[in-house]
Length: 371
Image (cartoon, rainbow, N blue to C red):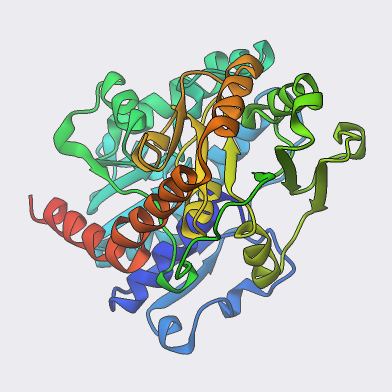
């Protein structure tokens, strides 16, 4: 699952655990029979009603995703319009509430408050290339801004995402900050003590905005310096032609088994996440839950998770900046790195577990319902 999907899954799971009844409107991108909700426990399933609304398939002409998203939101509206009086609150992800919010704004329907959540408002963050910049400016920004302004509530991960939302014109009283998190049982009991060579980790798919090309350039430029001091480990679906042929660089491919993945992550020391834009990266949450220190660019809500006590927050994603921070980590005493790693683990355990986050969100939504 991607970050947005994980966030949705845990919202449903922990709402249900807190005895909140949910109509879950979703569509299938897996081999599972999602109508059965087998990813939830029997007790959780008592509170979740699955409603499947397939995503339209259109020809891939310019703007096809937006057009399909709007059509999907109309299909969702038709599916739930008779149930609107029964809802206390409607939580929409991305463009799923587009038509519903539009109809309410036009005064054609009456219903409870509607919240909207765009993953990281990446279309208002720095693009990695000119093509993506054009997509942001000419396709995504206008509908995202309009939906954010017309919704009753706007959800934010916090950090710079809240700043972006306010700059769009959304008033502070309409914003609910909700960071993402991990499950209590997924956090490690103790950190893996750092030893030389230091183990650096990239976790995720090959995506331009994630800064993986800058990581590759930095490794190549530091090659002679690295052999004795560091190993670089990549977990994720990396194309063969993008892999470095260096003895201190390892590729583990895409790993779906949670136990194997967790065991691999916790054997590392430093997560590299030099993204151009982000929401609140699950890879950072998962790395911190396994006791890693983190190198990340100060984008999206990463500064909610990463600070000088538990990691290294970067101003940009360039290979020169990465080289400097990697060299700094080489010079850092392993004991100091262990202190940062322990701070990461403590921060997650104390502030970013779904048990706590779900209860906080229910209180905040209840406040919005009552005002």
